[in-house]
Length: 312
Image (cartoon, rainbow, N blue to C red; front, top):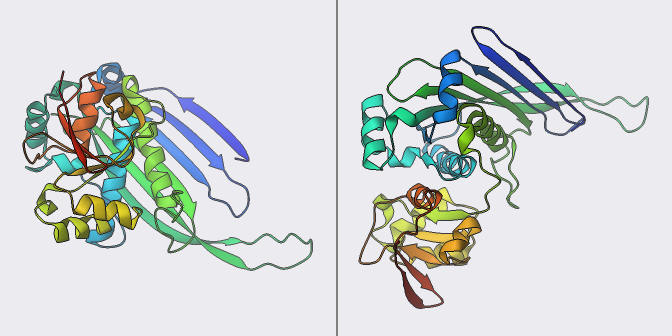
């Protein structure tokens, strides 16, 4: 980055702003954080973050579900596994339903925050830069993605803080490049989530996690055709071999990168479920169990063999 500037102002509302300016032609980003006094007193005690279903200002159902999946993965990573993701809120997202879901999952609503994420975008023209002095260069169209998070304490309706991040990219680019690099939309979301966790739930901040678990939705898990269709929609970055292996398995999870889950004995390519039958648990439930220092009971398919990992 060409430069970095930080400032903070304290009063009835604490505000922090971070601006990142990139070199000409590269992606730029900026973040604004607003912290209300109620959030300052809660922050040291927060033990769980709930990601509410997000909204985006473009695309259709397929794009929304894919970006929701990526955002949930980012929230799991940013909180060190202490997150309840939107996909787990199957009965509703109002305060009462969120509190019920938290209790059912063994979490304390009094120590939880909700993150409501919305992403919008807008285009603008910027002047091009010529490597040769004196040459006239036209204007280029760029797109600014605005990711905004509204933070609330579970059980309270008022917003206790906000995070807004803007990242700039090229028109019509996907949120992730074919090589896995994140483009502007996901850069804005990831940055907003990381800064929101660091500000409003600092005890959950975790170093970069490399674990990546692919999950077949429960609703699509009954047959191979539905599993493959769901994987194609939610995980377009998977290889054909990975999609085929999980689509043809009876398990719901595929380990793409074990990361800290290697401590459970998991390795890349493992197909994972629970012993004895299907499970409605999510990948976030596995992450929370590990974050608590427990070993869950798992069934592992590896190289045509099936193993059982006992819980403790």
